Image 1 (cartoon, rainbow, N blue to C red):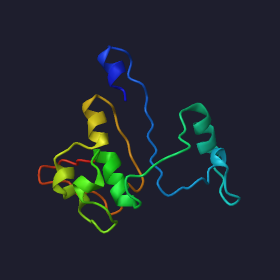
Image 2 (image 1 turned 135 degrees about the horizontal axis):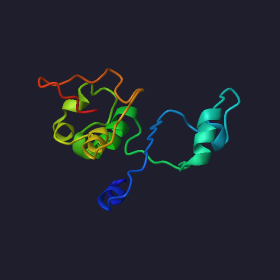
Image 3 (image 1 turned 90 degrees about the horizontal axis):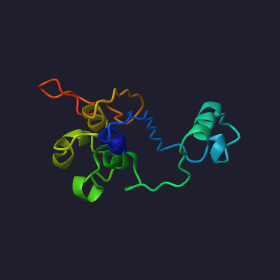
Length: 132
């Protein structure tokens, strides 16, 4: 996303990526839910690009996360369920840099939190964390 700005020598834009796969339309800016109060997400959506329609490559969390983080379709990775405990070690996934790694290699400082990897992400024997 930032490649054109970086390539032309321009200032790299700040990028905030919030993958939310279980939220439904509970934020106020999407119509809301009576028991959910989301003033900060509402304000953030008002200042940036907010997606109101999304499509998932597979209807489960892990398959969708693997596809988004590594750009690999479920029919190539084989990750269709939430029972793939070691999906970072799946051959098709392990040989590609993650979205986070790609931003790091482009000179961005990256930070993360949340449930992209429910069971954590184990460093390999060289101390490399492919998710970071």
